[in-house]
Image (tube, rainbow, N blue to C red; front, side, top):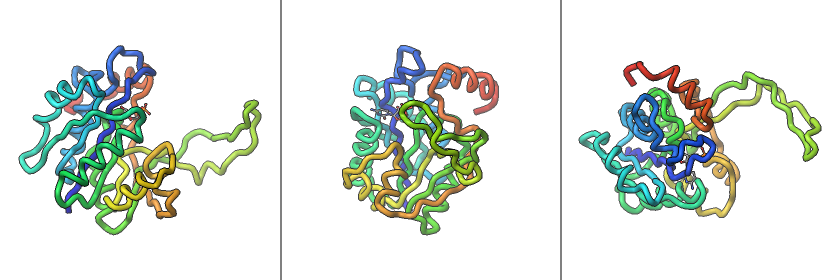
Length: 230
Ligand code: C5P
């Protein structure tokens, strides 16, 4: 089956405060996006990667990521859109139009640069086993409260039933296309698919798949991962 990974990487990364798109911010001298794409290919299950890059950085992103493709695959770089969902939609349209036999589509944030390849493989395996939508998740360590506009607690969901959701999220290609054509809105792709009434199943995520959003996250990544052979 043809597995294509879409990597939305067109954000400006303002919360990181680095003065460059987050995808190009280096950890241990290697840009986050390069690490993310390398992890996708190292799973051995991804044939093509389609990256939505900041429009001004398409050439730079192509230069650093194209050499990562294995002999059987390729990296394509497109200009992303105004919102993350626009970037995913642009990359998905390209994959369905230009890459033959696209049956499984992953959506993976460049910011989750240290996602272990075995998590990527587990997501692909679950989609190929017949699940239309698959997300990697972790249990929640903190108790979570729901609050109203004034910040007053309105409920305490049962922590045992909560999960934090990571990427890559995996989909049957037609299911993700329907979700993005629906005009619905959600903060992640699985959320869109859920709203179509599709069953979304979970596989175990991994702490290393942390999303690098703030300077604190970047410092944690430097401390944890640099010096390791990855
Ligand atoms: O800002 P945040 O970290 O939530 O963005 C998640 C991912 O979506 C990032 O990898 C970012 O580069 C990407 N993104 C995008 N196009 C946008 C905004 C964000 O591809 N317009």
